[in-house]
Image (cartoon, rainbow, N blue to C red; front, side):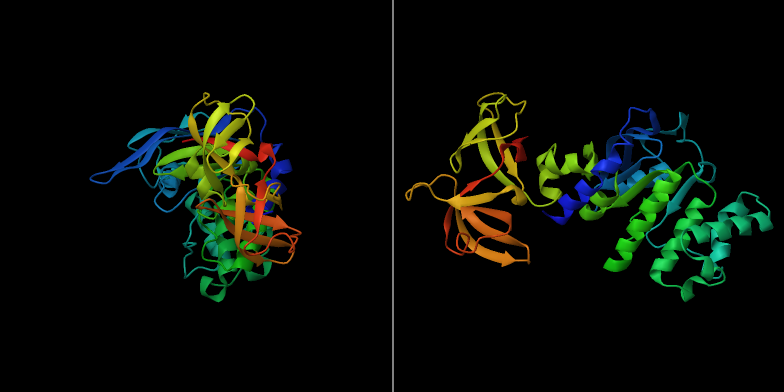
Length: 375
């Protein structure tokens, strides 16, 4: 099982509490952003986010996710569309009146202020008296494990500690929505994992509506109640992590999220999931809405693939020829070909007597792990 699959499955139970039928709290409707001579960076984005949800905007660089976040924060003005929180439109509301907390990729801490002063700053801007502001800042820093760092300047703290200060500053004034713009990208792997746990812990405790921007698929899978997958300024799919992984809505989602094998097919019986192809012969998949005779693609994840000896020595269709085997302890990544097409499989408890370089094997998968995509 891949790291992405494990992350998605680990949060599946936690999603149930967030997937109720409660009304939208943060609403983004037909949102567009155009730049002269450059076209639309954001093109008709719709997001309906429930109160207390943790939603990730996931996509490659230039897909529109950060621009969308910037318009919600008020740093960018939409060319069209609306943004509202709890029914109140924010399009004409200035940044400082939106009551939105933001954690930036570069932390944006004041270098001449201590950690406590940095966290107290948004309260002071809201005319909270100094004593109360410093007291609330102290409690906010304690909530992120920095009680012993109140008097330190940013230059005296590690990257992870600076990130915690930035997080405390975004939370100290109790915002309606928390926005996180790739906040973990500058941290090393261990610190990034620690901060993922910290952010999820705080979200669980505070149940604050949170939007998180990242291009890291595993990060999105591990942390989110739902994921909006961005591509070329549009949302291609907005679903729970496991749904995005196992039931991608488009070819882009299938290839962007994790590894996938795609086979050209023709639909025979959509209700029964019966399809065929020149490479595979007749195979089964999940039912689809495409008509019989339609050309489509069949997606099978590497971890769904299984191998067996050939039933007939002269068999050609659906035959996997092993080209390489990379062992990773309890699992192995198997590269090979079906006809001229490259195919990969992730095998657990591999039988080296069966699966080895040069072997010709029968390839199969559970039909409920084969998904039909429109061509």
